[in-house]
Length: 603
Image 1 (cartoon, helix red, strand yellow):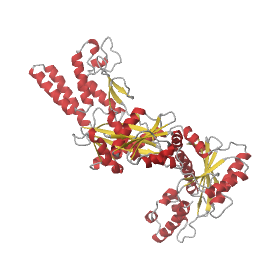
Image 2 (image 1 turned 180 degrees about the vertical axis):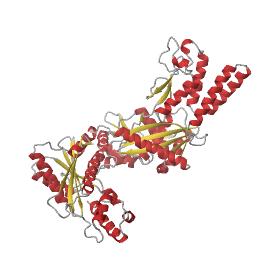
Image 3 (image 1 turned 90 degrees about the vertical axis):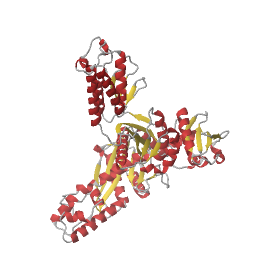
Image 4 (image 1 turned 90 degrees about the horizontal axis):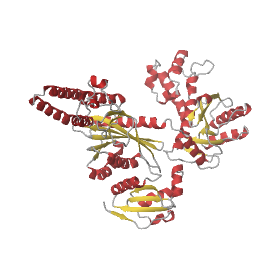
């Protein structure tokens, strides 16, 4: 790879002097330590973007503050830049670069090859202890089934220490008892080698060798040995037939599934060898600097390929990454690995399943993550007076301006605290007026907490824009309480603060934004439970009273079957006629329901 390195370095004030071609850039702190390494098609444009962006996430802000020097290495093309980036990151391990971690969700089979008589072990962890590890396997049951067949066929020991006398496994023909010399070291080592071939999925080669040994034993009139080998062959063939043959037996491919959200990413690789799924590996990391999956995937695949002793013939990636396919193949040309898109429906289904696994692993990893760091960052970026341990969210809902309700939800340490959820009917307005309804809900809530001498939240989040925020601020002032208030608008996910007329827009993958979205979306969901709550209430005037042909019976059908926000959003006229409403009546009811949803959607 031909590399032309630029002499010297640049300071953040000298960005205009950075070359415009492809290459790698290295950000250094004032001590000259490399804190971030990146690649670019246009070095000057990419580097300058860090210093001219607005509303960066806290980690990006921290990086930018620490940049004192900028080194660049100009290269011929993006592929060379990717290779060099990967090597430099591996060498220097900068603080702010993504670090993929291997997620050990699946079990392994371990063979302790450093022991005089290696043993086979079920393991949930892969350590650097000199042992051979196989897997990870799809399930614990599959792993134990493989160990079971290996014990039966190859008679490997499982004991931690060689005992002084044979154990039960020897008597039930599941161990060759090297502890009491029932097998020579040479024969035992041969069994170990065969077990390793079996675990590598080399059934054809192994069976061929065993059949040759069986014939040789028969020629030598060693009939007992020949019978034992025959039993091995039959057991392996039976096990092979029970495996899930998913593709042609010549296929050796790794299928790559990606799931990314909230500034985090999980990549799962499904490994197929000789047409069989032999296991999966899962990796996770935190995205930095507004990276997306398309940017991260090439670097991940390079690092992953370097960890493999036996490399696949192909990496199969999702069609959503088609735009980087050519660049990837250029990078992997020297690895003799081709990167391709799914070639048929079966491969499409494998990619889909692998991506679903990535989504599941994402949930496993981050559904229970301590949110204290996000809350701390939230306090910092919004300039809040207090650490926002308790956040209360407000939303209002109404049906055609009637039966208006407000919802209050409470989150503590980033998690819903449903014991503090509240509904309240709006008393002061009979026509749609979000500002007035927000004012009433906020004023009533905190006047009451003040009156009852109860704890106030650290932050109030209003579902809406600047108008809703101002209404809530007036309510807080009139209630004579002191609480931070912000608003989150749906349309562009803009955060409105009392101190600024310009909304704050965080990156879409920001964990802070996601936290606020969770609170906002929960208030919206809880407010719309009012639709379900009014079912069957006799003291509420029906909004369908003015439709000719709607009596009590049909009114009851509508209330029971259709008066739900999520149902109305996707309702069709056929749904109403199927429920027994005449076509003309169904059209009028359909129009009324759509009118309801349109009013709700504009909020």
